[in-house]
Image 1 (spheres, helix red, strand yellow):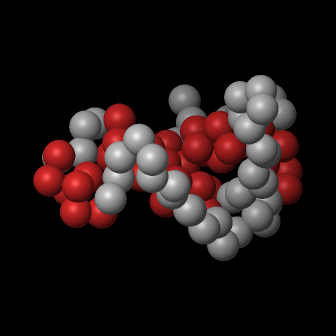
Image 2: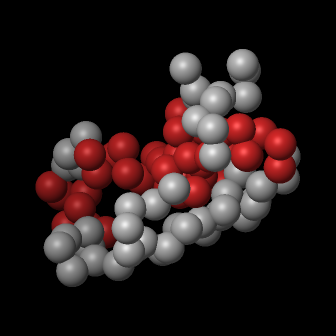
Length: 85
C-alpha cells in the first residue's frame, strides 16, 4: 500500500484524458491532495463561501518539488509500486 503522498504523486503523474500531467514529488503533491480531500469530505458551506469556492472557482496549487527521487517517482507513477516495496 502506498502512502497518501505517493497516491497524489501517481494521480498527478497519470492524469485523466485531457488533463495536463504534473511531475511532482511527495511533498509537492501533498498540498494538492489535502485540498482534494477537503473538498471531497464536504468542506463546510460557510468555509467554501468565505474562500469563494463554488462551481466557478479556479484553484491554483503550487508544487515546489519535481521528481527529486527519479527512481522512486518511476516506481510510483509508472509501475504503481510504493517506495516501501
